[in-house]
Amino acid sequence: MSTSAERTREQLMTSALEVVRTKGLAAASARAIGAHAGVNQALIFYHFGTVTELIEAASDEAVGRAVDGYRDRFDRVTSLSELFAVGMQVHEQERRIGNVAVMAQLMAGAQHDPVLARASSRAIGLWTEQIRRVLDRVLAGTAAETLLDSADLAHALSAGFIGTELYHGVDPTGANRAFATMERLESLIATINDLSPVAQRAVRAAGRRLGERAEKRLGEVDARE
Amino acid sequence: MSTSAERTREQLMTSALEVVRTKGLAAASARAIGAHAGVNQALIFYHFGTVTELIEAASDEAVGRAVDGYRDRFDRVTSLSELFAVGMQVHEQERRIGNVAVMAQLMAGAQHDPVLARASSRAIGLWTEQIRRVLDRVLAGTAAETLLDSADLAHALSAGFIGTELYHGVDPTGANRAFATMERLESLIATINDLSPVAQRAVRAAGRRLGERAEKRLGEVDARE
DNA sequence: GTCTATATTTGGATAGAC
DNA sequence: GTCTATCCAAATATAGAC
Image (tube, rainbow over all chains, first blue to last red; front, side, top):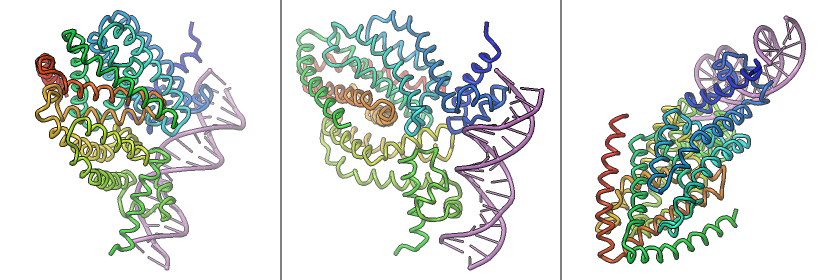
């Protein structure tokens, strides 16, 4: 049984994201969100304190629900190619309903706002962790396991999706070309997984050296920050 | 010989980018930019019309100059690995001075502002074209030529750099992991270029089929938009 | 070409009635 | 818990003096 206050809170949260989605973060003022929710803007401050805290709460709720909703689908994935296919489908769906656009707006705002930074960190963390979990499983025992690191790759995919979203608003064809490259690279990995044992050993050996180099570099960069 | 008006225009342009760099697009108001430039905010409207048009002019000027400045360095590149190394160095430098952060802010704003969209389109276009030109040259005659498309890859790299920049502000370690993946993939391509002829033929053949599939898909997506 | 002053709008936030 | 009314700060933009 939802009280009137709970309904108001929910309306404000969905309206907040809806305004960010359609008009961008810069236009997501208390007045705009209140008007969209059909309630007075003062209620935002009563229920959430500030506008950005409302957006934070809305993001937490929406991302948690979205990621949960895809969990079963990801759990049924059994190969890297399948993960890639499902990942692209999920991304396309999330993109169509505007959730990726919202995330991109929040991350841009997060660069200079600690509240949005917290929200973005949690949001991107949930998605990345979901991908990493499946990657860990489907990479196990394959040649690609030597070439890639599931955590690294999960972060790269998340960053790629956000970057491509911004790219899409500026140059749609260019964004599709970026996606085509991701597809090519995935196919390449799949191809290597199916190579002859001899060729695979050569690639693995080279890959091992390269992986070590990458990890070494990563440690150095992190130490600097 | 620079007139007083020219100096004022230049100060406003550099100040505009400096404010975006340090405080974000949302804080780049006429007052903030004017104060930073040490001139009255009214001059922004006199010289540029609106604040976003000032930012547009500043971006055009700065990006053109930056890309030109790296041209020679890119022209001396002779292999994919070398391009990757130089690209990472250039990106790291541009990131350190904040130019990547500016671009990310502009692209986020561009999603809902036609003036910023124009500016972002030109800016990202210059960088992408620079990368594509070199890719075209260094890929020629290699095994990777069959696996990749220089225009597609150039767009993917640009999108990746922007996405990673936003990611960096939210999760620095995660961003470095994303970079590590780019490095691994580049190494993989380099490895394939050095494989035995037999293995390479297998990879090439698989790559050709995959490349055709990617291009087909790309055509379909573009037709929908 | 630059500044001061100001009109106008918009936004965050709070007080107080209901 | 919600609304009205309002304060205050900040923003874009313009008019007019210098």
